[in-house]
Image (tube, rainbow, N blue to C red; front, side, top):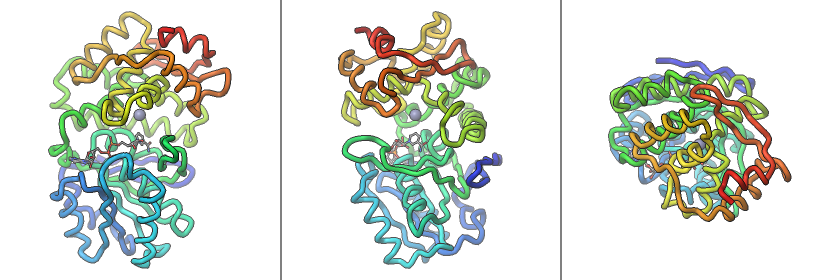
Length: 334
Ligand SMILES: NC(=O)c1ccc[n+]([C@@H]2O[C@H](COP(=O)([O-])OP(=O)(O)OC[C@H]3O[C@@H](n4cnc5c(N)ncnc54)[C@H](O)[C@@H]3O)[C@@H](O)[C@H]2O)c1
Ligand SMILES: [Zn+2]
């Protein structure tokens, strides 16, 4: 399956195929010297498959986890690229989840004012969501994604075989973003979760989610309008995420709870709850409402008195609204 994403910065293919990792070198074609980046939580079997195809390439392996989206690790990666004489004609290849993708993409965006970047996402979250759209970033002073760039990849290779080693909790975590894509823009995608066992439809779920993201990103590369719909469940989701340490809840789990918080319509609530339960995703948490509100106030999307939130009117339809902090407080249960 091939999806072409057309953005102002560049057009690039997303190639999704079982076993495509084994053909990465052939598919990538002439990319100069590749510089491979992965993390130590990506099973060795996947890293070995990539390395075997580029035997002369350096593989820079960072520690797994969000803490690697930091200036020290970013600096180490760039220094290693310099030490290996990576030039403007060369290519960064990321193999891993959203952490590896975000960090590698940002390194590629900055190195020599920007070099080619190929992403091979290996988690459901990165295959469904973070690998396309061009958002790259690291965290600073505890503020997630505060330093980054829009840097579109040259190519994205999705090998769903790599998900076979992903722990179930992480699998569900990424699928929360697919449920979100269904709620905001694709009723049939949502109904797929309702009707069937999602495990039988993983490829279709990923493909449909990518098509939603492609559509939104193409229309609104820099998130000034339509792309904001992707933030459904994220206003409260990000707040929950920051109320807890990163181990308690994963991003997609917080998005699941954030979607439930925002779901008002009784039918939508009921359907959403059933689907999230099927995925073993949490529906609510016991974060202190006052703290949740204060996190939202501090969030970069809270434009002083107003917060842009996404409201789903029914499955497959959503729009943005400007809410006052008083509305946010009511929603949070204050
Ligand atoms: N750029 C974007 O648009 C965007 C969108 C959403 C999220 N993100 C970012 O993505 C990050 C989260 O991504 P994630 O959920 O992929 O987490 P992650 O990258 O931390 O990966 C989760 C864990 O799974 C391991 N892993 C990776 N592939 C594996 C595999 N095939 N089998 C077994 N284990 C594997 C990793 O080593 C890690 O320990 C966050 O930093 C978030 O900010 C970015
Ligand atoms: Zn998200």
